[in-house]
Structure formats: structure tokens, C-alpha cells
Image (tube, rainbow, N blue to C red; front, side, top):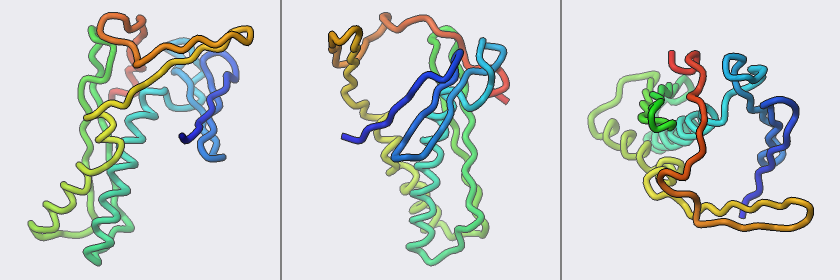
Length: 159
């Protein structure tokens, strides 16, 4: 199983290591953070956009088309009542015109992204707490109304 580590820096700021690559996650000042990096929610949406971008570029490469200036924009809407991302829109901008056949292949490539599949078919998530050397394991995840209260992402993330 792949290992990603997240270590507390200060306040609501965290160092993240993914295969040796450093990232920082933080909350905006308006939510009590120092705004030193994207929020965890923004990182998840960014991961989905990057996954779709990778699949689109591979599809364009297979078709021997230009892909260097390919761009994926990601917008998401926050459901304040449900305290979750309600919708995500990925917008693809390609550097040149493509025919209808290639358009369909690009759309299918986006849909084949593993991150999208993870959203469509959620994995089993176990939560392990190690406190004072005593482990506690809870799984398979939390359900329905047992989600803890959390604030919405910063309004700056919305526009």
C-alpha cells in the first residue's frame, strides 16, 4: 500500500510527503489558518483535475495531436448544509481543434481517471488512532450523520 505522511507544522498547517515530494496544506485566514497552502478539499479537487489532465494528455499523445498547452480548470461548489463538495466541474482547454471521434476519446479518457473511479466507487477507509502506544482501528469508515462538524472552505476558493 502506498504511504503518504502528513505532519502538523503549526496552527492548521501541515507538511505532506508524497513519494518524497513536499506539499503544504493549510486553511485560509478566514477559517483560522495562515493560508500557507491549499486546503485539504482543494487538494482533493486538484488531484481529480490533475488525474483527468494526465488521461487527456495521454489520449492526445496516442492520437499524435498537440498537447503541450492543454489546461484543465476545476471549479467546485460547497454544500454548506451537508458540509461537503456538492459538485465539481472540470473544463478542458485544448491547443487545437479536434474532430468528433477524438472529442469522444478525450471525454472517455477523462472518465477513465482513477481518481474519478475512486469517487464513483469509494474505497474501504479504515481509521487507526495510536495514542500512548495503544492502537485503535475503526472501519470501514464513518457513515451518514456521524460526520463531524466542519466549516465550509474559504469563500476565496469559490470564485
